[in-house]
Image (cartoon, helix red, strand yellow):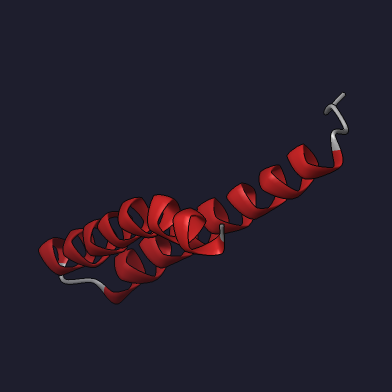
Length: 61
C-alpha cells in the first residue's frame, strides 16, 4: 500500500517541486525558491494529516 500511496503522491509533488524551482529560477531570487519549497512542505503535511484523520474515521468539525 505504501508503494501505491508513494506513486500517487510522488508524481504531483515532484511536479510541484520542479515548478517551485523553475519559478525561483525565472525570478532569479533565492527567496522564491524557498517560498515554493515551503508551499510543497505544507502540501505534504496537509496530505499526511488528512490521510491520518481518514484512517481514524473522525470527521472534521
